[in-house]
Image 1 (cartoon, one colour):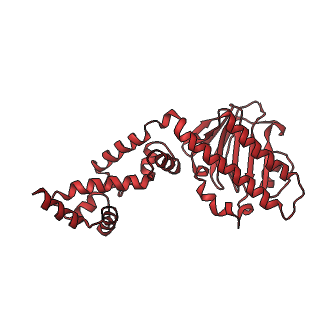
Image 2: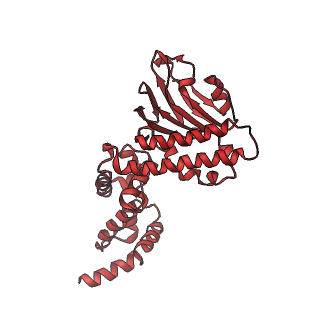
Amino acid sequence: MKLIAHIATISKYNDKIDIETLHPLVSFIDFSNVKPQKRERESAEAVSFGFYSIFLKEDTNCEIKYGRNSYDYQQGTLVFIAPQQIVSIIEDGENYQPTGYALLFHPDLIKGTSLGQRIRAYQFFSYDVHEALHLSKQEKKLIQECFKKIVLELKQSIDKHSKKILVSNIELFLDYCTRFYDRQFITRDHANTGVVEKFDTLLNDYFQSENPQAIGIATVAFFANELNLSANYFGDLIKKETGKSALEYIHLKIIETAKELLFDTGKSVSEIAYELGYKYPQHFTRLFKQQVGCSPNEYRFLNLDISQ
């Protein structure tokens, strides 16, 4: 088992690849200017960073592993890594000369800023690496323009304006990435074709099996795992396709199933709740009333009267 190397600061990362640190909390790296280092595949180690890391790779002889998935880079691919995430970067055994770029920024940089308040909204930092952002030529040009502005500011002497300008440009860059991911959800990745339909099938199978009693209430994480997607990517994809969050979609299926079960007067509301995976029936009753506007018992009596 390989050890996990933790690189806590921007300066330590810069020292590792032998480049100058222009700012203690931000770094932009053009890997074509980094000295080649010979790395053997067998010596690849897992690593985590103490800062946000975005890599724009333009070579194809580098593989990243994150969690259970691996990803072989295509040209013009952006990968986002949040602090403390564990990844393995595996390069070939030759003198490796990468040709991409990296933008690194420490969480301390964005404390007390609008970006600090919004950083959790950029959920692509917790996507799996196989859910990377693939840029079109025009998108790549926009990204490179953002990088140029950040580099220009890094070359200035640090003053009272530095933090605001750097953070504003990083935030602009991340907002562009959000836009490009919205486009990717629609236009790219044939592997995700029919995810909503697969989700529907999995939901139906879940409630027709023993899973609710064995596992509990259906969760977004469970179905994301079944589809080999990260929970955040899966949730964002479902939201773009249906206008509803994955959790809202699950709740709709729970209510739909519950309505069918309520026509069986031989089962109490508590028994139905347990059958749907609820440990506490009152939680099921609360959700039902929120979604339907009446309690399960009220719905049962009303609809039994109508059907008779």
